[in-house]
Length: 268
Image (tube, rainbow, N blue to C red):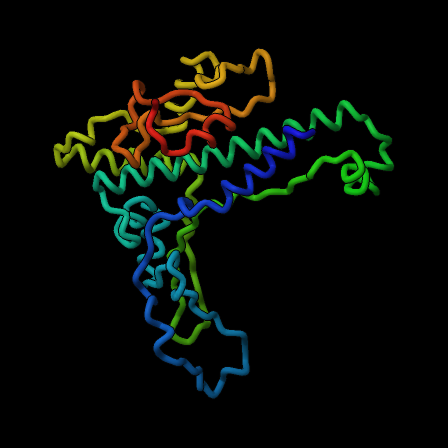
C-alpha cells in the first residue's frame, strides 16, 4: 500500500511536467488585442459557434485545411504548429514520447496494484458498490482516477456567421508520437543529416531495452521476478540534455525510484 501511494505521488509529478508540450500555432495569438461583437439582426435565432483560435494548440483555418488535416495529420501538424523536421525538434518529440510512456506505465501500474489490493482484501460486494471510497480511505490506499494529459492539437473551422463548425483533432498518444518520430526522421534523412541515422526512441525500442536488461533495474538490481508490480522505465545513460542520443548503447532500464533519483545527471 505504501508503494502504491508513492507511485500515485510520482504520477502526479509526471502529470505536472512542463515537457508535455511541443509546438504552438501563431493563429489567433493576438486576438486579445481586439474586441468582437456579433451584431447580426438574426443572432437570436440560434446559438453561434465561436472560434477558440486564441489557444496556442488551436489553429483556425479554412474548411479545406481542416479536411486535409484529417487526411494527412502529421504533415499538417508539422506545418501549422511549427514542428519542423529538425534535429532539435526530433529530440523534443522523442522526449515527449518518453514522458508519455512514463505516464502510461505509471497509470497501468497503479491499476494493476489496485486490482491486486482488491483481490487480497476481497470486501463484500455491498461495500464495493456503496462504500468503496470510505473503505479504501480506512485501508490507507490513495485511489486514483487519472486521465493522461495527452497533448492535443486542433484544426478548427468556424463559418463567418458562426452557423457551422468543423474540427480535426490530433492527440499525441504513444502511437501518434511514434509515427511523428518516423515522419520527422524521414525528412531529416532526406536532408542527409547524421542525426537522422540514429536509433529512434519509440515504444518498440523501449520494450526491446527492457527485454535486453531482463526487466531488471540497472541501478538497484531489483527485477520483476522479485517484485511483479515493479514499475520499470527506460533511461538515457547520458541525458539528452547533455548530448546523449537515443541509441541502444546509451539506454538502460531503471526502476521508477532510480530514474527519479538520477534525473539528468551524468553517470559517475
